Image (cartoon, rainbow, N blue to C red; front, side, top):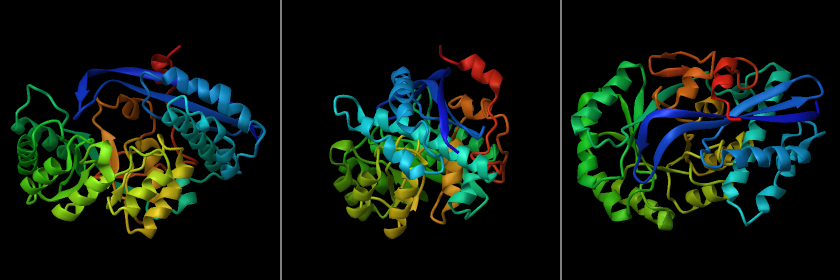
Length: 369
C-alpha cells in the first residue's frame, strides 16, 4: 500500500468572542485536513492543529517538503515514513514546531489509512485497553464581566451537559483571585466532578505554591503548567514536592526528549504531550512508553479527534479533553458521526482508522482558499 498523493485543506472559523487565558487569547478555530492517498485506493484522512497565523506555511511544508519524501513509500512502514520526514525539521532558521506539526499531520493521516486498510479502529491496533473514556471540558476563560459565582454556573453547566469534569483556566490573576474562582466552581458542582486547573505557564514557583495552598482542600485532580517556561522543570518539581498536588505538563514540548527530561527531573505526574503538535501519533506512543517507565500518567492536550484513540489504547491514559461548542465548533460540526457523551464518558469511534466521517458541507463553508 504505497503513498501516491497527499492533499491539504486548511479550515478557519471565527469564534463568537475572544477566549483569554493567562497570557494568550484565541479569536479563531483553525485546522488542516490532511489526506494521504495510496495506490490501493485507501485514503487516510485526519485534521490537526490550530495554526492561525501560520496555516498557509504549514500547508506549504506538507505539500512541498514532506510529500516528495514519502511518495512511493509503503504506508505500513510508519517508522520509515516518519524518519523520512525528519530532514525538514532540521532547518534552524524557522520555527521548528511548525515543521514538527506538519509531520504530525501526515503521520496522523497515514495511521488512519492503515486502520482503514485493516478495517480496525486505531485504539485497538495501539493496545485496545478500553472502549470509552471519561471526558472533561475546558473552560473558565477570563472575562472581565464575570464574578466567581459566574464561573461556578459555567462549570455547573458543564456537569449538566454530562461532562465528568473540567479543565479550569487560572494563572492570569493573583493566586488569591484565582483561588476564589476555583472555590466558586467546587461549590457549584458535585464532589466527584473532576477539577483540573491550568495556569498555562502563568506564574513563578512561589505564586504557584501559594495558589496550591489556597485550594488544598478543593480536591484538585492536577495542576497543569503551573510555572513560566524560563525555569519550568525545576519550578514544577518544587511545586509538586511542596504542595502534594499532582503536576501536569508536556504540551509545550515538541518531541519525546523534552518529555523525557520532565520525567527525569521529577517535574510531572501527568504528561499531556500533544500528538498534533509533536510529530503525530508515532511520537506520542513513544512518549507513552517512556511514561510507563516513570509511573507517569498520560493525558493529551485537546484534539479529541486524535487523542481518543491514543488515550484509550493504554492503561495509563486519563481524560479526553473537549471545548465548549462555541470554543471548538469544528469538533461539533465537522465530525458528522461524533460519539455521544453518556454519564461523563465518550465512546471511542469504532470505525476503521480514526473512525471519523467529516461533513463535506462544513469543509466547503470553512475552507480557506
